[in-house]
Length: 446
Ligand SMILES: Cc1ncc(COP(=O)(O)O)c(C=O)c1O
Image 1 (cartoon, rainbow, N blue to C red):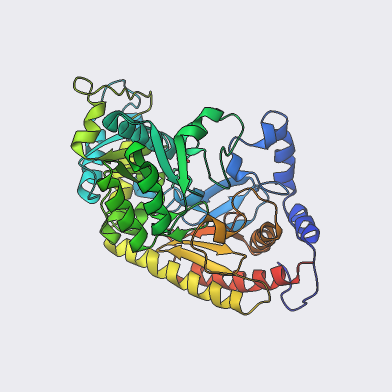
Image 2: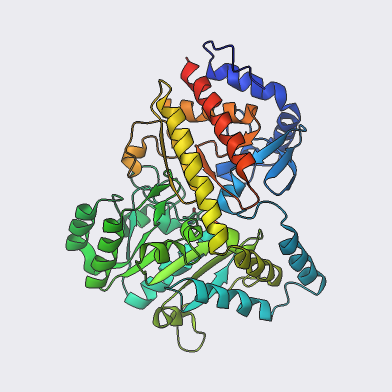
């Protein structure tokens, strides 16, 4: 634990050295991993300097690292673990399902149980299908829109993250293709538009609206830093897509936790299609996409002409666990999550205001992000760094992450955090006290 009484200038390198001192088994595993996995892992986002922490086990909102530290988990696998780790009732139903047979090459009742819950909860969802990731969900939703409208072009938000398939790998942290490996031709059929700028949206639709199969957006811009959409922007998105016979897709992979019926229910703006993922599988891999029956009918094996197969689609254990997880996420549970989220945002912003570093805390409900930039943060440009830029903001973010880790708080290296249902005031106090001290460390960074 860092001494918070002895304040003196420290460097990022010093914070990194202290991290290395405390996490030598993680470093050993990282070196071993690098011999067989490029970059030592199999997921770009979990790579961080100087090396990621390897986790041994987790229960509720706490995880034990391979170096023996118990950390409070405010990352929750990037919002997937809404009920924390290994929630007993979910684990029980999943293991029971696995014992009875899983992966049967024919449907089980579990798929209907989860589908009915999603149809009941989300106003836009009349029919739904399942895949194994949010990436598959947005890929198939966009595919449905292209088939239904018979148009090729897609509009997305600058800074919007919808997974890793080609169409959405455009304009995530900057202009054009996010990564080499995405065919350059994709750029010619995917446009981006600024978030929270209804005028920009209007002129984009005036120019090309009749060519867009769909406009896909997150009601809270997640990877760019948990930036809520304004009501005005969401309403403009609804009106403009309708006026141009283009489909509106809400990517609610992260925002679905904002009410029992997602951000769409909370904001009263109903899209044509919705994508879901993360916690709705109870902790096993999942993606779901659903919406209007006439659009979803493109997947009907006899009446439509869009294929949608996948060995693990509707995986019984995932479906069964997902149903239990969803049932536990009722309005009262969401109210409690949101109250904790509000407390975190208020207290960390107050702590940020008290140090000599620009801090803006964004978020909504149980989602939050600590930005090291002057506010207001309303879109990718005002969020500053973007995902992969190495700027001073990023040094502050990394320093904050390391300073929080020293205090046994686990969150995203980029500054994102979220609340899980096992958390109580004790964990919220632990987080905010750690954040106050960590921000003072960040202030000392030279
Ligand atoms: C809004 C949003 N859409 C899609 C995805 C992709 O989901 P997955 O990682 O399950 O492919 C994510 C992942 O973080 C996301 O936040």
